[in-house]
Image 1: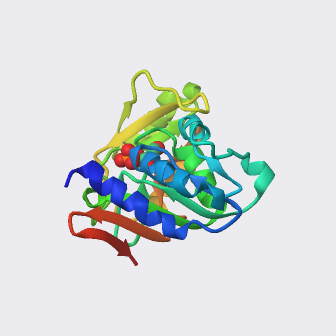
Image 2 (image 1 turned 90 degrees about the vertical axis):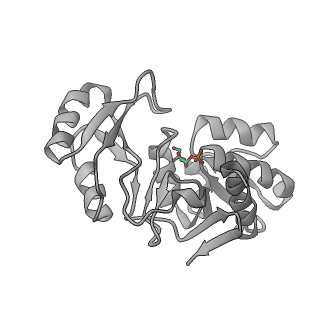
Image 3 (image 1 turned 30 degrees about the vertical axis):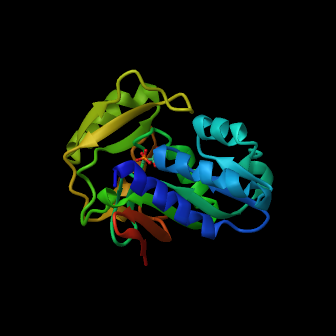
Length: 218
Ligand code: 5RP
């Protein structure tokens, strides 16, 4: 079974959480893309979806799923998205695709967050995957120095601009033992839009594709 097969299996398993009626939030990335393709098979159940990126909005529309503005719909029953790393406590690193800020907004506005991933994303300690941080362009140097002072090694994601017009610093060398504290600390650096730690609002349910089937936590 390939990694992509495991992503697809996790995405299919998330369908059972999709409510009848209403609007759900949809994440970004290859696993979220599999979920969108699955969602298209039950699209009659939904009034529409809120997208966490331009790319996701385009894929939803291609499938004929109405894309809604978060400001028009209020709280969402469900958010489904992938992750770059996840702990058994369901704290996450996200933002490998650069959509972390909109993902964090939609996750925050959702009553339930189901995270879908292949089993290779499960770790005991977050930080092997470089932590993405979205930064206002003029603050790049200042934020990078603050991150170095915290023990990280920031690397500018070359040639990349977020959907919000900002840059991404990928921070290497962190061993994240207290994700909630680091998430808050990084977000307090002036010029940081947000960071890819989803710990204060982690996933409620983690669905991991494995060769033996889909594993659910908790
Ligand atoms: C995008 C993300 C993605 O969820 C994360 O990068 C995982 O991607 P994939 O499903 O392609 O492995 O946070 O910003």
